[in-house]
Image (cartoon, helix red, strand yellow):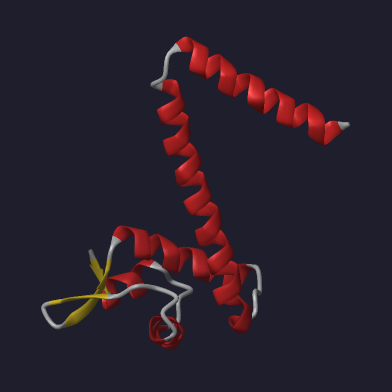
Length: 112
């Protein structure tokens, strides 16, 4: 966990008022530890992502929630696919072959 001051010190381009606004707007999740705002490693990475979007890529402030929601959905889909892939790998060879064949048929039907 990193406190507010650590986050600001570790991300030089980050403006305190921006971070506080993102906290109020629930773009980042804040935990409270010993009466001060603190951030998990995941939230710290999210803050860095928001900084990249906002400062480097000039994504408008009003657009950030939409972009972050889409990225969250993409991340969730990736996690589900990872879980599904491991479930398929745990199956016997006939099931794995059937899944691979179904995927191949789907690809072929999209092409033509």
